[in-house]
Length: 159
Image 1 (cartoon, rainbow, N blue to C red):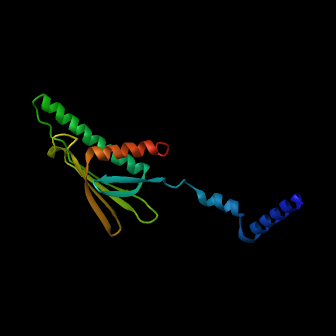
Image 2 (cartoon, rainbow, N blue to C red; image 1 turned 30 degrees about the horizontal axis):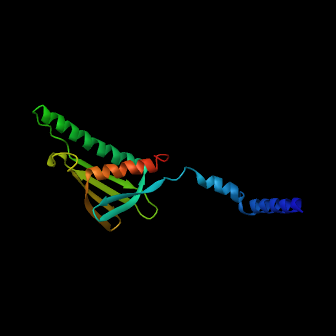
Image 3 (cartoon, one colour; image 1 turned 90 degrees about the vertical axis):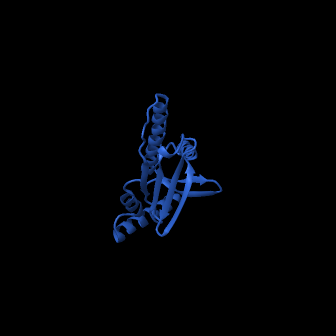
């Protein structure tokens, strides 16, 4: 009985191959190609409101690199102040686009370290837009850094 079912299924598979090209499994293999970009929800919390969007590997590394540079600028400013010198840090301006099947998401972050005493009081101006929708908020730098650390810990296998 089982042999008859397997033979019938194989015959149907051959029939499908003859009538419509390669069998369904072969068509799946041909269309898979590269693995799709893995995106995970990232949330920016700014007081009572929050902004959530998908973040992929390359965008994560862009944002993390920009935030690290701001933190290094704060460190350099502090070291210069101890020596009695003045260090002028560059303004962080980052724009990255995350591809999404429902529409690309653009993330813009801006922070001027020169306007704050230290990294604990610094704010990052964040703008997230998709299509005609655009939202903006000021986020404490340290809170954004912590969110990135939590995101990295939760998705370390994909980053």
